[in-house]
Every structure is written in C-alpha cells, then in structure tokens.
Amino acid sequence: MSIRFTAVCLAVAGLLASCVSYPDYPDRWAAPLEAQDACAALAGSYEDVGAFGNSDEYTGRAKPKLRHYFFKAEKALEDLERVEFEFGLDRVLHVRGFTGENLLSETRFSEKEGTLICSENDAEISSYDGVSRSAGNPLVGYEYSSIVLLKAEDSSLIVKSRSGGFGMVYLFLPMAADGHHWYRFPASQ
Image (cartoon, rainbow, N blue to C red):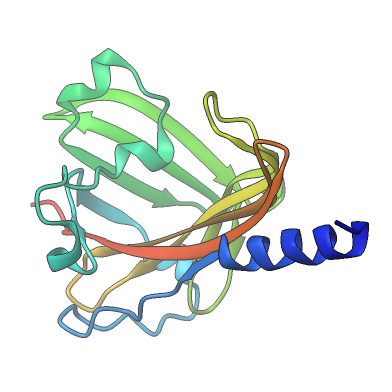
C-alpha cells in the first residue's frame, strides 16, 4: 500500500468521523427579546432546572441545570433552586446561586477582562478554548465551548450551548465535531 493511498483513506475516514449539529431555535418558545443591550436584559432570577430545545430528542435524560454553566460542581450546590443575574454599570455580569434566600455560590464575568462579550442580541461567555483535556477522552487535539445567553419575551433565560473540537481519535483517526444545543430556564417567582 502506498503512503498516498493511506493518507487518502485517513482523510476520508476523518470526514466520515466528523459530525455537525445546528438545531434551529425552538419555535414553541417565546421569541428572544430585541434589546439595546443583551447583557443588561439578562438581569433577573431564573429556575435552576430547565428544558431541552427538542424535548422529544432527550426523553429519559436528566433535565438541564443552569448551575452547570456557572458554578463548579460541589455537593453543597445539589440543593440549588435558582440563579440570579445582575449586570452593573461596571459592565460586569454577577451570577449568584440560591436555595431560598441562602446564597450558595457566586461568580462574575466581565467585558473588560474578556470573559463576557455583550452585543445587541446576545451575551457570550467562553467556557473553554484550548487543548483537549477530558479524562478518558480519546480525542487528542483542540476543543472549545461557550454559551450564548438570551432573554425571551416571556422573561425566561435561553442558553445556547456551543462546543466542538478537532484532532485525532486514539492518535490515529482524524475527527472534527461542532454543534450547539438550546436550553430554556423559566423566570423564578
């Protein structure tokens, strides 16, 4: 077998091993707000437990939790009920997790520090961008993930979780993946 034939076979296998998923915004949800400043529009309180964009696709899976996007996994957060967003004049998004009136965890994202990108339509927080780092992950390469936050007309929080990567599976098979998923978290009362 020639080297050229082997290279072509690996390239074709890599294309076949790639996947892309871009589901549309769920039409059964309230439309996103048209705000002058999407970050300021996020201010509010939201339920920790949400819904998938395509509920039929995820029957039987655990419901998405807003805490997973903002706080490190801790035993103390298992009882978290709601997540509050506050956006100040300093252009910092403060995110706090509560059970009842008890503050369990908080974090912040800043435009100045580059952890938050605000636009007219949405706010973006980059979760990870770099070398593949997951334990037990057969992909050696580059991966990225971010979340885009939108406020809907019904005051719910919409999260568009984006992720992907490219590299080699088991250092042999080229692979690429890219996609996003929609989640909705109702406003908390």
